[in-house]
Image (cartoon, rainbow, N blue to C red; front, side):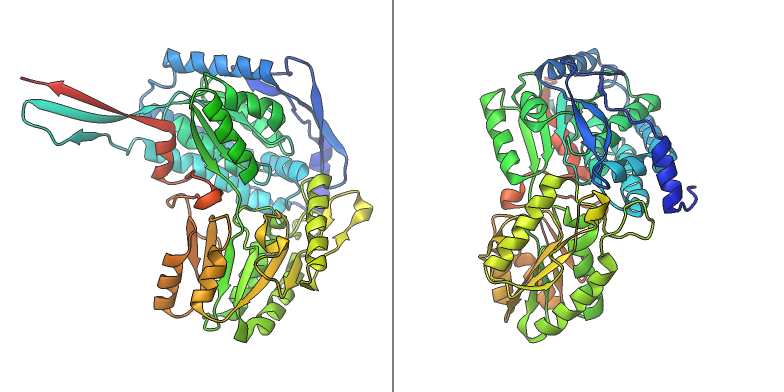
Length: 499
């Protein structure tokens, strides 16, 4: 088990760390074919961590060829489910054995608090791998109802070469949600991490090889979306594309799939999730604490963040005061300090985007209840206070658009019907929460909400047993649970005539 480290200890470990910025293709680390690189800049202090291979079309060709060759060879595809399970369980063990290294990479590269990376992200990554591994030899195929002289079989077969494009906010977890079911079902995978936080994914490739995943079955291509990502999406020999990220990019990937080989596309996209608090909520202090966490955790860089706080008008002023008080526990601090709860924004561009939305809220007439300032500028890092706007209308830009930062919009309502109407008045449908002591109200409200996940009297619940995904422009994907296997398999019907 890891011992509790101080900030000084984490900084010493970071100072001694060697960063690998290379691609991983066909079982070995290598530079980009072009030799081009880009800088991995830490949002903690603006310093360059390392240079990272900037992969493009040439690298995609190599990775797809390696993945296709490994798939057609059957070295992984035809391995017994129990064998794939054993390798993936070892992969999960290695993730935990390297928990401190992986957590530190996440923090230095992306800016999240080290305590969150160590206690949350890394164990969740291992859990995704191990849960999926344990499930794969417990999924059965089907026999169709047939006459006595026929047998109809429905089998699930791996789809082939899977390209997974993942975001920068949870680099390890999002990768594992894609990798685990794709690998478990026998596919070969090419992972493209975000250029904003590629280092932990690059390290993951070495651990996968150490666990026993054959060469060519798991490849990692760091690079930009408009180069490596686009090339993967347009490639005629990629069978399936899975993505988590913005709605705008998700739409473009659907176009690329149609322009190429009609590859399967599974998309998990943006959110503007409503957190609905009724006056009869069973514990307003807990609701306020979780509303604060729902907007400030991971610096608000969460697709399911509770960015729209819908509060019954009769308790609105009191409840907002409780949320503001709760946010005092979420003030930005140095991410390598174990006591820090709110870290750095991923980069300068994202920080400027968030500040721009805060200025927009002021200009549109929302009342700034707390926060709104860039802080810790003397560090050279990217930090902003958790921000609450009161008296927001659902039509304001801060309420309608995904900010991906710690900016909360408070919107009052008077009836359950009005709350539902406001909650559903969005292009998104990823998540929602309802706080009430009335079970009938909770059920009816949850049923009426157009969201892929609805939490009652808590925020952000569920585990690997529940599917994750959204409605509307939050995408069509489903990560986690047995439903994830469906994305990476084809159904084949085989009929045998015994007459």
